Length: 62
Image (cartoon, one colour):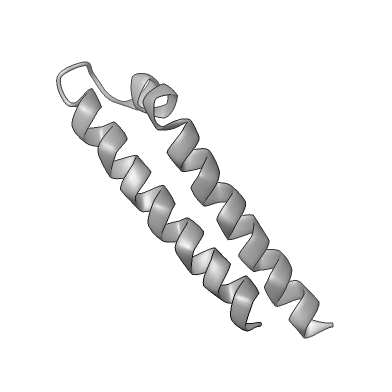
C-alpha cells in the first residue's frame, strides 16, 4: 500500500513538472512584468524539468 502511495506521488510530481514546462509562458504573464518574463519562463521550465526528473526517478525506483 505504501509503495502505491509513493508511486502516486511520483506520478503527480511528473505531472506538475510537465505542466510547469508547458504553461511557463502563461504563468509568467500572470505573475511577472514584461521586463523579466523571458527569464522567469526559462526558470519555470528548468524547475519543471527538474521536478519531472525527480518524479520519474521516484516512479522508477519505487
